[in-house]
Length: 362
Ligand code: CP
Image (cartoon, rainbow, N blue to C red; front, side, top):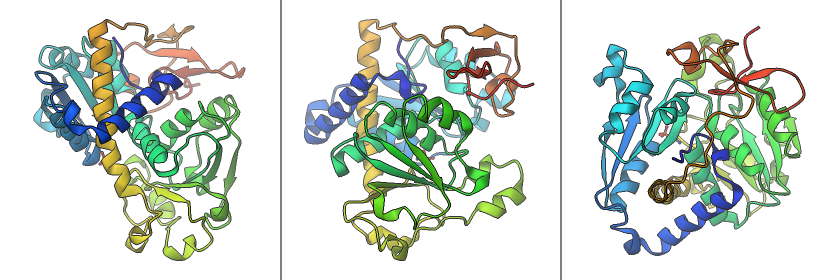
C-alpha cells in the first residue's frame, strides 16, 4: 500500500507524473468526471481547515466519487479517547482512501501504519503538509513554467510553517534552486531543515532580516502566516506577529515575473491592496489545490489497485523504544505508540523521531 505522509514519499518522477496528471485534468475535466465512481474518500480533520478539507471534498466530487468524514473531532469517538490507530482501522472498513489532518505530529504516519487503505497527510501539526506542496508545485509550474533554477524567498514563520518545510524538501529534488530565508530570530528555519535537507541536497540558502533587501532577485516570494495556535507562549507570539507585512510599496523593486504565493489563510501579512497585483498568485494557487488533489487521489487508488507495496514506512536503522521524543506535540508523547528513532542523515550521531523528525530527548 502506498501513502503520502511526506513529500519525499514521491520520487521526482512520480512528483512530475502527478503534476502532469493535474495539468491533464485541468484541460480535460469531462474525461475524469466518473473516474472514482463508487469510491469513497474519508476526510478525518481533527484540526480546523477551509481549503484542504473542502478542496479534497470538491476533488472527489469532481471525480464522481463520494465523501464521508468529520471536521470536528469533538463530535467523534476521539473525544472519548479513541486512538488514531483504532480510528484508522475503523475507517478502513468504510472508505477507499483517507485524508487526515491532525494537530499531533506524526498522526498521519501512525494512521498509515494501521491502515488497509491509502492515507494522505493533510497536515500534521507543524511537521508536514505534502498536498499543499503539490499545490505549490502545480502553481509554480503554471505560473513560471519550471522547477529548476528558481530563487525562492520564504517569509514569515519558517519555524512552525509545515508548508515551508514540505516545499523545501520537494524542491531539493530539482537543480539550481536557491532559498532565501526571511524571518525573525524566533521563527527561523529549524536546524534539521538547514543541515539535513538544504546542505545534504546542496541547496544554497541564506538568512536575511528584511524582504526589501532581496526582493529584486526573487522569482517566487512565499509568504506565510505567523501561526498563533503553534505558540506555547503568547508573549512570544505578540513579539513576532507583525514582523513582516507585504505591501504594494515593498514590491516596487520586484521583477515583473515575480509570483507571490501563500498557502493561506492570511491574517495581516499581505495587505489586501496586493491582491490586485497580477503577480499575486495565491487565489489561483487555491484552485490548483483541487486539481492536484484529484490527481493524487487517482494516483493512490491506481497504486492500491495494482498492489503497489514498495513503500517502507519505517526507515532502515530504526530503533524501537530506546529514546523519548523532545517534541511535546509528537504523537509518541500523546498516544500509546512505539517510540521510533532513526539515525540523523548527517554524521552528528544524534537520533531523530520517525514521526516528527525532532531530536531524541537528552
Ligand atoms: N493551506 C491550508 O492548509 O489551508 P487550510 O488550513 O484552510 O486547509
